[in-house]
Image (cartoon, rainbow, N blue to C red; front, top):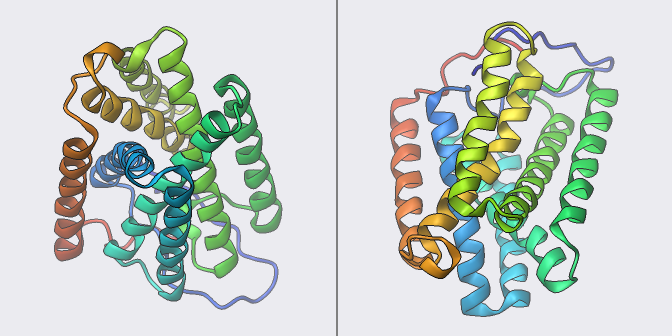
Length: 263
């Protein structure tokens, strides 16, 4: 699924423009995106277990702030900086959803719709301000701010949605199958002209979160919880190594930094 045919509406006032700060949407984009979701899920659980929930959230918040500071300081897409920020959003987004459920006792059936409402609000504000939601138009600080707010909301929503399905009868493997089927819907709808590129992209982007997280949980958690029992540490390290490998390849090959159409 790509977003090459989305036209960008020009801003109404002069702004300082940068090169687009988001990579091209290729198969590598989706592979790394799914890997970051799974790694963020298990890394969040691992940190909470090793450090305790409060120190883990504090550390995750500091790391996210640092990663986004680097990302915002750059004036073009840099693979390592961008994907490090995505990883930290994944870790912290998982923590945000887990704090509501574990720390405050908010059911997933409540937190998932709440995060959906937050995501919808961000989209409404973004479109009202910029008249576009295209990821090929992230060339100003304001659009970049909206973009990362959206990404954070999608990770929190996806975490809550994935945990909800896992606890209402699907289990982790069943959730993997459910979301693997679900992600085909926007892809096929866009392929056959029933859904525009921007809507299809963001729908798929949201679904990658519970898909990757459910897969990582299934691999890491014990047999009593329906998992393979590989453990949080091995799964986190393995998925991290895969992310590093793919991002390193993209950084060298520039496969997803070649000219993306003006959005």
